[in-house]
Image (cartoon, rainbow, N blue to C red; front, side):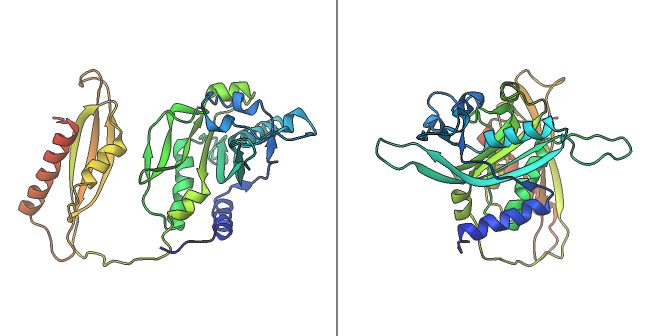
Length: 315
């Protein structure tokens, strides 16, 4: 696997984001010690290990930053105070974490971006606000252009400045690379930001290791794909991503793709359950699949998925 030098990688990310309508900002590396409280960081969070600056110019610039999120939100606030409400901004910079006495702080290279306001200019009076999927789409465009190895999104409660119901962690294999989601309303209130905002923050050093510099080509099948839809009734705690991972872990060669086409919870389902609709696509490179072949593979996958998840097939 070829490794892109970090500075080249950062420059490529800059081109991708500015091409997508983002503006780059550059904040000071020093910030206010109140930032960790404004961001709801708990006592055990390593980002509370602040590096103190000797003889700071002001109290608001008396420590080194441990996250880029605070600076992005401060920039949003400043722009809103000047009647600039639609914002797409990003920053690439370092954070600094204090270690043991006498040791140099740990430095990490971070990419962070923020969205707020409307997704596009007014179109015949239409005012569609940005949402989680606008942010996720920007991130996935970066991954696609960088030829990243596949990643996964996992719902979790580990980022205190993001909304627990509108955020997730970003993982490559079992290594957490960052988080993305809606900024927690409590944080916005503390910082006096009067707008919903969406933010991601990822570790560039981990990102760099996941880039596949080579391009692999494969033959495109000349034969049609066949789709099968199945609705599984599962516990509400079951993540859609986890369901997909369980299906793909069965490594059936003729299963070309699987995706979510519907999520439902409510009338007609037991309390504490939801319905996940999965669409399976089957295709062979060398022939048109028969119904018998498809049914045999499909039934096997569905049976194993039910067994591994405790799901039921929705009527």
